Length: 173
Image 1: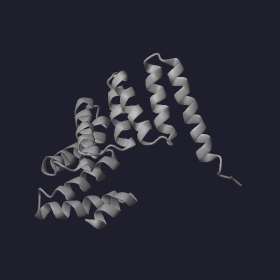
Image 2: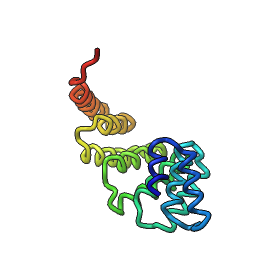
Image 3: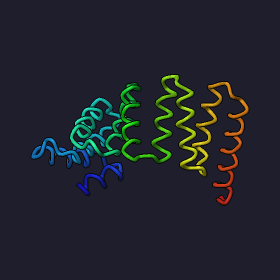
Image 4: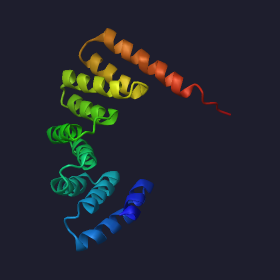
């Protein structure tokens, strides 16, 4: 499993797929192998296959928020917004309350035109990662979609200040 996981991380998706399939030949319901196979498919843009493998992994390993997170990304990318929302909410309920989870849930809700709900998620993301300019940018976009121009402008200003703070110490030749 370590080799397959390392192969996914390194972008060697053919190797990851091959190793995961080898395990699944002997243990077709192995949740880690299904997860790695689904992650390899997802990184290749093979969304239907990713959703299938990750759904099977999630059905077996019901308490794994990372499986749910990967499945939600595959479903969101496939336009299955309601399913993706359900997965993000379940991952968050299982303790995956980092900024990325809140942000992805917000993106999923915004994709459905549910901007008030998205704004709440983006606010939670910004609170979880107050130094991340992207979280404030997403919150600003949600406020803009809601017609709250002043709130959006404050979020954009915060994002810009954080961006400058983060990247102004870099020097270029």
